[in-house]
Structure formats: C-alpha cells, structure tokens
Image (cartoon, rainbow, N blue to C red; front, top):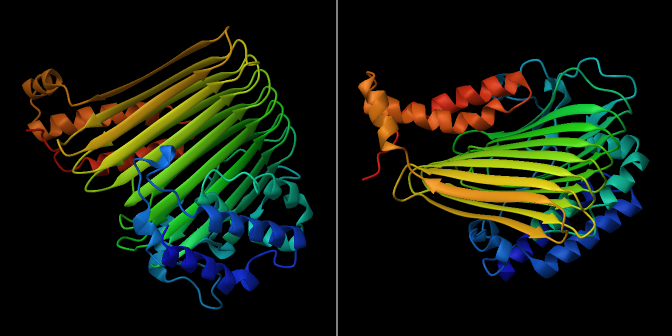
Length: 443
C-alpha cells in the first residue's frame, strides 16, 4: 500500500473518531484503536498474498473516499424514496440504511416474537452496549485482512439481531443498504445471534444509484446456537463504478443448520469472504452462489468451511456467468480437522463463459486430516452447448433467444434453491432483465 493511501485512511479515523457511535465506551474505543494499529501495519491486501493474487485493490487504495457519517437535518429526496420502495422485499421486515446509516423513517418493522431484538447497531451502542461487547470483541483480534481491521476501526452502523430461544419471526428480515452519494466509504457491521432452537431468515441487500463511485466495506457476524436454523442471503447490486468488500462469518453450535447464498450482479470490483465454523457435532451448512459479470467487472468469492467436530455436513454450489472482458475468481476451501470424523463435504463450482475475453480463476480445495470422511469437489469452465442451441433454433427460436434461455436455465438452478419466495421471484426478474439483450457469441 502506498504511503499516501495509508495516510489518507489513517487520517480519516482522526477526522471522524469523535463522531463514531460508542465513543464513550472505553472497551470499544480501545478495540477501534487496536484495529487501526493493525491496519497501519498490514495495509490493504496485495497481489503477493496467496488469497489475493488474482484481485488487485490498488484502485480502491488510491480512491481517497471519505468515511460516511450521519447527516444532520433534511429528508430523503423523492427519487431516493422511490428507489427504496422499488428495492424493498415484499412481505419482509425492512431495515433501511442510506450511505451506511440507519433510516428509521423508511424502515418497516412489523410484529416480532416476544423478546426479539431488531435494531440499529449504533442505537444499541448508545442504549444497551453491554449486550454487544462480547459479540464485537470476539472479532476484534483476528483480522483476515486489512479491510476487516478497517471495518472494526470505522464501523458506524448496521443491524443487531437477536432471536430468543425457540422463537421464529414469520417474515424474513430485509436489510437494505443503499448508496446515494459518491466518494464515500461505508463501514457497516451486522451482528446476529440465533439462540437455541430459534429460526431466522435474513436478506442482506446492497445497492447503489447508477453511476456513483463509492466503497462498501461490510461485515456480518452470525452465531447459531444449539439447534438454531439460520438463512443468510446476500444480494449485491452496487453501482458499476463501486467497490464492494464483504465478509460473512458463522459460528455454528451443536445441531445448528445454516443456509447461505451470495448473488453478485453489480460493482466494478467485488470481494466476498464467507467463513463457516462447524464447531460442534451434527451441524450442517449449505453455501450457494451466483455471480454474473459483464464489461470489465471483477468479482471474487472466497469461502472457507471448517469441519472442526465429528458428524458435520457441508454442501457448496457456486456458479458463474461471464461476458465481455470481465473476470471472476472462486476459491472454495474445505478443511476437515483431525477430530472431525464422519464429516461429509461436497463442493462444486461451474462457470459459463460467453465471451472469448472473459476469464475465471477457480480453485476448489480440500484439506483432510481425518481418515473416516466422505468428501468431494470439482470445477468446470465451459461455453454454451452448440447442440442445445441448434435444438432450440429448430423449435422456432432465434439465436439470441436460444442462447439467453440456456444461460437463464444454467443460472436459475441456484435461484431455485432459495427459501424465501419473494427473493426467488426478485432474482428471476433480475436474471431476465440482464439477459434481455442478445448473448454474445464466441467466435
């Protein structure tokens, strides 16, 4: 990282420190400064690091983005309000964040189970910080990258969700993060605790107004206690000039189940890290993902599943559709630790290239240190099947429609696996809109 880039981000902390939420909490400000010291030492990732060798963040480093803080006075413009209404998921509890800051006037939270918490992180730090201390500090010492340290130092808002034991809200929770101003960096932190026997479905949706250049740096930490069931679905529709950096971490306890999906459609550069710890017996997780790129987009997914206890199960399916001169990266790592006997893990990454200039780097990995396990992985990179195109054309379709239908069928396999039907309908509509123009033919 260049000295000028490093100095800018360090100076931003000095500029906004007095306005950060929880500034009167000694434990939090100490954690923020420790994280900033870590960031000062490591900087942003470089191509010399194995996990970042295909993804350069040099452009982000030089950006000079300012940290987004709450703005005093004034409401949202009518056009922004209309955008929120268009993006909101039908039939869900809605929490709206504009430029990283919670907007209660545009949020819609219905009846929740008794004792359930669904609140702004910043507001909770002011109102009841004791319930957050252990959750925040558990991720304040081991940073997978400089981005995570920067998030800890500069986090301004996000969602705090706690589902009491045995409870289950009927509707999904829709966390809508909308960027409406350029040249800003937002650092959101979401904290989720699903207590014993509870169920929760969360949709984390990131979007931005067209043409804006900005940076989203967000982290979602989830704890699934004994026999809890958690769904976390992430939809990324950032502006095509934006940077999107995200981390999702999950700590699974005895008998818990976790279903994750990541849909990456927007941004100029996106990096998503998902880490799952199967930390007790009889835990299960499924990770699904779909990335669709065009132009010169660059989208990178890194996943890691740690089978740390016996009799745990994981399933992973990621698919990519690449057009133009875009590039995608998939690195999926499954680690079966020595005491994790009777683990069952399967991973698959499939990619469809629609252009001779598109490129994908795929690296599924298995590290197995136990001897009684059932594990497998695979990856494919291919093009549209000429025979299938010929068959559809022989049934009256033109070439462009035939190709679009085959791409839709390839991508929809991931969409069909979604639990919440409103999100499934939304994704199907987005897929159709992205395939409305003819699919480029390989020469």
